[in-house]
Image (cartoon, rainbow, N blue to C red; front, side, top):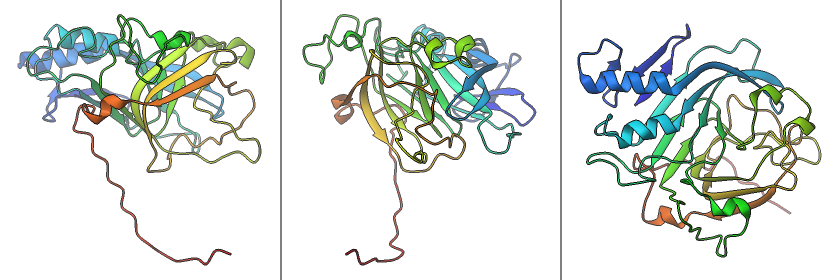
Length: 291
């Protein structure tokens, strides 16, 4: 499925074959794609991104709505891939203005039960815009690693902890905790207190410049001091961010959590939907003698 916001701000929805889906589509599945996507989107919401130093307009996608309709077999033959692109032109000279956000994404297709026949297990979302992930992602109903009490954190297990193969591919990815509040985004860091958060996904995103001194990882936007951020996945950087290019290490952006980063061994046998394969072309341009 695809969601395109055209240069005039119109939202358009397409099936995997590239056919536009509308409220008047005669094909019942195409009409359901329109209904599902249209109801899952929160359009033209605004937040302050302190790393970028600007207010951004985000389209929020309620992943729980997508998952519910997929598991109810309302979207037969869903291939597990959602592509979205906001094609409105930036007006402020470089900083990103239009972004996407994934919310209510603790459960993805196949997490709670086996999907209907012909439907992929897991989820891949891809965009050429920046992405924010709001809250725990792909954990199921319970994420034991949130509490840092899992006896074997490299192999997370627990009742209700049902991660599935997933990937997020974007210009940049910023992680927001379950405690994030849009109304506090423009306030001081002390007003942006986070909670423990877990993300299970391969993340493919661009890199950004470091600050002039004391650069810190700035993939968050909250006060995470004393909290735990747990990540199971695989982090890939094969390009530079084109839109979210704010440097690391700015003040009032975030305080780091206690971080637990692990490779998700599930990827060895279960890749994210879309047969995710990336290739990077390298060419030798010049040799240097290093003393």
